[in-house]
Structures are given as structure tokens and as C-alpha cells.
Image (tube, rainbow, N blue to C red; front, top):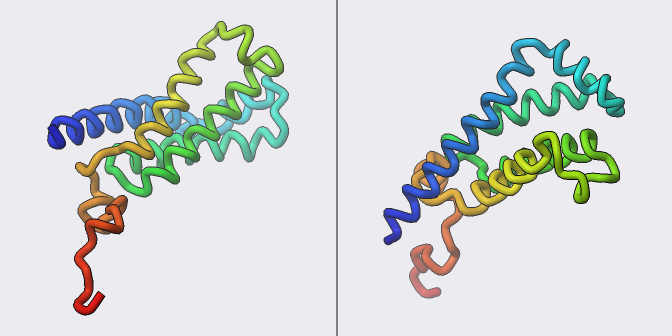
Length: 143
């Protein structure tokens, strides 16, 4: 059962990562378009927000797919999505969930879930043993 859970987590991470990559890569390719979008949304500091979104969505997607720094990446991606939801829906966010807001909320939740439940089929696990429970570590002699 553990293998199936880890495979499911890997598939989920890869799918969510690909969606974020599809959203972030164009922002890196044409940063001026991303800046214009944030200006049209009347975002504060549109240049900084556009670069944050481009970098977090692209690099975060790659890290999510590979399984590196999963909790941090999941939170950064969720913050990115929360900012976009706040900008696009304003005070009506939880009431008027039209125009793709549901997709954004689902994407943010999926990023957090993948970040904190990414499974063990991950480069971070292989290289650093990230996410190991303390009680599974070998005990030192005399401890």
C-alpha cells in the first residue's frame, strides 16, 4: 500500500507542477506581459509581483516535480495563488467564485497538499532524507 501511496503522491506532484510550469514559464519568457497584467489588476508593485509569480511558479514547479524542498515550495506556490485570488476577486473572493477562481483555489490547495504529502519518491528524499521521522533514525550507541 505504501508504494501505491507514494506513486499517487508522485503523480499528483507532477501534475500540479506541470500546471504551475505552464503558468510560470510564459511569465519568464515575456515579463513585460506579466507586468502589464498586474498593472491592469491595479496590483501594488506590479513589477515585483510579476517577477515573484514568474520565478515561484517556474522554479517552484520544477522543485515540486523533482521533490525538492516540498513544504517550502508548496507554501510559496499557495501564497502566489492567494495573491492572485485576492487581486482578481477582491472582497468578493469567497462569494463570487466565477472566472476561474475555483481553479486557482484548487491549485493553491493542491500545492500545499503536494508540498506536505509529496511521498517518498522524490529527489529530496534520496539526496537528503528529507521528511524522515525522527523515531525512524538509527539510534546512537548508548542512547
